[in-house]
Length: 264
Image (cartoon, rainbow, N blue to C red):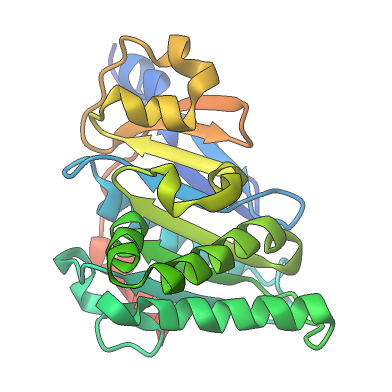
């Protein structure tokens, strides 16, 4: 069917995760799949998929959309947001972020975690009364933790414990974690902390075991589906399943500039 290029509007203070895949392909209608960004909703995000599935592209897009959404004056009249970007493999997809104050790579990624974790403790103790959003974005988190487990198991345990606390306590304190990886194996998510992501995304062609780990109650709905780069599945709050399409940005340089400004 010929596309009419119709796009539905998005409510303020929400993050567009993509567009409904079937409506996009079958009718040319762009129906946004969104998540609320207020502390009332769990917006910790877990992005998964094998190499080539579009994770890095999606991550940059979500980062820029988050910056735009959280700088809405009606939502944040008195505070600015804080962003931290940990890039374990120093991926070329994020080369434009290198050298920025809140960008860390390789063995320095945990410096960002320590800063965000300190903010969480300050808010929990009452020392910090503010609640402006603080977001830690961690690309290739799984690879980072596996390397750390091999190198220093005690330090790895302490690091994963901090991640667990952020996932468990961060939402009401205005602190969000966005993690990107290929396979979210339980070894890097102690005591079931993997279940504390409110937004779970799987992109591209992946092995069935990833769905089994993240969406075991929805395997029948996913069975037989084939996804190209930038297409996949979103599970919201552990129950609401969507199939999405992430389109290409008309001007990706604008996306990059927003992210650069946020980390400067």
